[in-house]
Amino acid sequence: MISLDVTCLVILKRSNRQYWDPDKIYFYNRRGCHCNSSVCVHLAYCSHVQGTGLICCGSVLFFVCLSVRVLMQFFLYLYCKCLWRSLKFVFRKVTGRCELQRICYNNKPGARRTLKIESSLKFSKNELLQSAVSVHPDSVEKTIEDIMSLKKINPDTNPQLGISLQASLLQIVGYRNLVAEVEKLRREPYDCENHEHEDMLLKLWKSLRPDAPLTGRISKQWCEIGFQGSDPKTDFRGMGLLGLHNLLYFAEHENATALQVLHDSLQPKHRDVSKEDGSKMSKLEWEKNKFDKAIGYSFAIVGINITDLAYSLLVSGALKTHLYNVAPETPTLLHFQQTFCYLMQEFHRFWTEEDPCDIMEFNRVRTKFHKRILKQLKNPDMALCPHFAASDHLVNL
Image 1 (cartoon, rainbow, N blue to C red):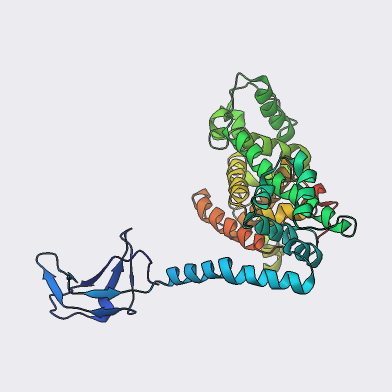
Image 2 (cartoon, rainbow, N blue to C red):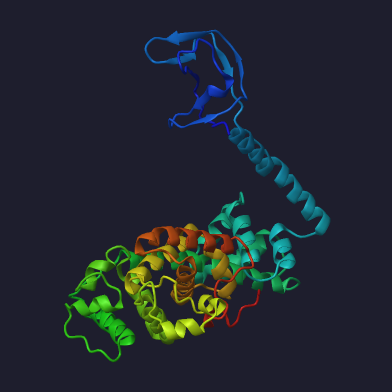
């Protein structure tokens, strides 16, 4: 692919050859990147640059490079500015409905509808519609009235439109507020002088180790639930209080699952099986029980890392698909924490299936898991964890 930032053509001189080979043509952009291409038009004489081993374009060279990226941007600009607006005008005259009406009436509630409404508002040329995606939740109802008035839509004859727009707009502004709330927790460092922070940490221990009293605030016992040292405070530096909030929610609200995941994480790569028991098992039974699967990892550290993964999905907007499908109106921190619980369980299952040699393969497995989740979220009808309470009132799936 030809880069758009192409500024010069350089023909590499290899093995002291005095002729140029089309296969050795490289296009260099301003970032110093290069890529092979035989698509060029040139009318020139080339002059030799002494001592460099390169032949560069001289002043006589007239080089024309048509960038695919520029052409795509140009046609996209024409489509957005001219063709699409013309099509919208025609559609409105033919159907008697504006774009927002068509979206609401032709799509079921959920991410598919809300994402289209968000895009329509964000790229509108009207300032009122552009600002609608960033209003305060308390102003949503007034904003809907203003939009209906602007579009000259009678609310009495179109009652469902107002309801649909309000639900979608609450999801849109709620998502923005959730990002801000999560970011605030991430930026707040753990403070051992703060009694609330300390209480949360002690609750985490009691939830995961109910039968083992903690001997002291600073203790090697913390390693039993997957912290790196005797003071968990140092492990929260990356995700701040957000990591602690998520771990505590998982331990309290999904206690049985959290205890099972913790138990599995403490197992070594090979589980001990007696020769007598092993001889009784068929190969299929052995595979089914996964006695030779890798399990061991640090529970708390992995939880903080999965918190980072959930955070990146949220901030990038990839999590909109899921949250717009599970939150009937405003997405909240509760939805985010339930998503974290799902990701912890799925990563544990994925880790076992991948069967890594040791913990040094964690980044590879995490990256592969991240790509898998992103692929799932590209489906606008996708809800990662519909079995959680957040989606009891799910209307789309």
